[in-house]
Image 1 (tube, rainbow, N blue to C red):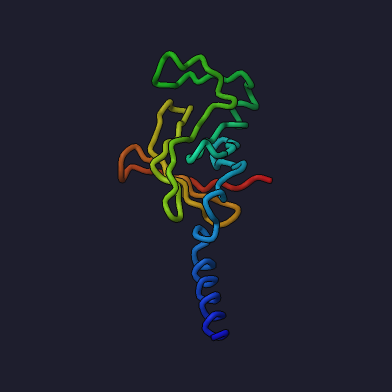
Image 2 (image 1 turned 30 degrees about the horizontal axis):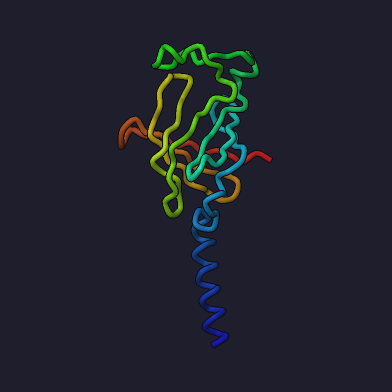
Length: 144
């Protein structure tokens, strides 16, 4: 019986090692993340059952701490500050990823459908789509 018990534990461990996203758990995406473009820093936190992500830093904010959302498609929002702006939201947990959410890009004022998939403890894959298959995936790196 002990042999079967150990074999079962070994099988589960092998599956988790083969797929780090499954081992990660739903809260593994929480924290501060560096984006590959413009040295952005996004903090992802819980918003009820969903996730929210706010912009903390970027090249643009370092150059102009009072940077405004001038490219927003909604003209009424163009005077709002980009510092602390919610960039992610509306996600639902699905097995090994968060899906059904959105990501906002202040560089073009567009909001895109998005999914977040953990890629181990120190990275995540964020996919934003105008419409399938017009998608772009970025790898974000965890910050301490």
